[in-house]
Image (cartoon, rainbow over all chains, first blue to last red; front, side, top):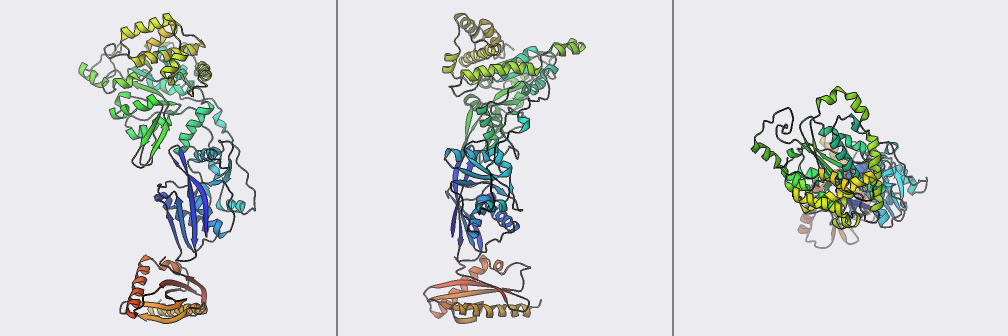
Length: 512
Length: 121
C-alpha cells in the first residue's frame, strides 16, 4: 500500500517541492524507516509521528513502514515533514482520500497537536507560483501564510481535527488574513529626537539618511550622543511599503523569526549587532545557509556602534551587500540568496582616547595611534557611505536652558512627516524602476532623474577638485542632493541643495 | 520468574505457533531443531519454499511487545542458523525466514498470534 503526500522544502528564500511517499509493506517485521537523505531532525520525526498518532487515540500500524522523501538526492532539513508523514500513514490505515493539489507542512508535538513552524509564508508563495490550490499549515502559522492571496490556507490544529476533515466529518474553513493590531500603531523609538540636546547638523543628517535610505557615518567624542541619535532613528522612519514589507517578512519567515499568529512586518527592522560579531553572523552562512544581520536589516537600519572596533574581515565583507543590495551565500552543498538593502548607520570615536576634536579636553593619543585607529576602517568602506557627519560635544550652556531647547526642538513625528513625504515622491518616481529609494539609484537612473543645471554642476565639479572626491562620491553627492530636494518637496535641484549635500562629503584623514 | 517457567512459556508458544501455521497450510518438518550452537524453533515447508520460523512468546506486554525483541542481531543469527541447516541437508533452493509472535493470556491460551513473513526483507 502506497500513498503520496506533497510538501515543500525551503532553502534560503527558495522553495522546492518534495514528494513524501509512504509505503506500508505486507511483509517483514514492523519497522519505520525514512530514506531520502534525512537530517537528524527529519529522522527524529519518526518518534514524533509515532507518539503523536498513539496519543491522538489512533492505533499505529504494526507494519513495515518505509518513507521516501523525493527527490532522494537532495539533503532534507527541518521538522516540518512530521505532518506529511503522519498524513501519509493515516491515509493508508484510515482509507481516507487526500485532497488534490495540496501541500502539507508542519511539526507535530507528542500530544498530537501541530506546532508553529518556520517558513509557512514561503510555502504559500511556492504554492501560488506553481498553481497549487490548497496548503495545510499549523494553525499558529496560518496567518503568516494567508498573506498570500489566491491560495487556500487551511489551519491545522491537531491530527484528529485534520483526520476528521479529510474523512469528511467536519468542515475546515481557509484562514483569512488578519493584520496584527500593533502593526498600525506608530513606531515607538527609545527616545524622541527632541530629547537630544543640540546636534542640529547630526539630526539633519539623520533626516536625510532616513529620507533617501542613505548610509550615515557619525564621528564624535564619547558621550556626545551618537548612540542616542541612532536609537532615535526608528522614530523618524516611515512604515514599510507593501512590496518592501513582503520582502522583509520573507526573510524573517525563512529564519523562523515570525511569532505564532504573526502577520506582515510593517515596522522597519533596526539591527544593532555588537562589534564582536563574526563575519558569518553579519553576512549569513552555515552549511544550511541562514540570513545574517545584513539581511535581517533589509529595508531597515543596520547600526554598527563603535565602527572601528569591528574586525576588519567583518567590515570588508560588508562591501558587496552594501553595493548590490543582495548577496549569495555559497557553500559546497547549498547556496542561497538573500536581500540586503539596508541603511548603514555607523558611529565611531575620532581617536582611541576619543577627545581629538574636544574643545576642552586634551587628546592623549600619539599621531601614530590615531593613524592606526583610523586605518581599521578601509577607504573603500568609507567611500561607500553617503553621509559623513561630526557629532560635536554638547555645550554646557545647552544644559542650563534645557527646557527651552527642548520646546523649540522638532519632535520625531514632525520630522517623520517630511520623511514620509520624501519617500512618497521617490515611490512615484521609481514606480517603473523596481527600486524604492534615492540611495538605490544606479548611474543610469541618476542621469535620468537628477538633471543638474549648469550652476549646480559647476559647484559640484569645483568641490570634486578641491576635496579630491572619487567618481563614486560624485554620484553619491547627486543622490544625497536629490533626497535633500525631495525633503523640501522640490522637483528641481538647486545650488542650495547641492551646497548642503557637500557638507556631508566623505572627509579624508588630513582634512579631519 | 524462574528459568524453567520462561522455557515453559516458550514451548507453549511454539506449540501454538506450529498449530497456527499448520492450519494455514504449512507442513511441519522440524520442531526445536538443535545444533551445537543454537536452536531453530520451527522449520516448515510452504508452496515449495523452506520456511524457518522464529517464535517469540510473551505473557504480557508490560516489558515490551514480542516484536521488539527481534533485533538486527537476532535476525543475523537466524540467517546463519538457517544457512547452517541447509548446508548440512544439502538444500539449495528457495528459503525464507518468518517470525510468529504469540501473546499468551492468563490461562496460557493464545491471546494474539501475529505472523510476519520474510522478516529479512
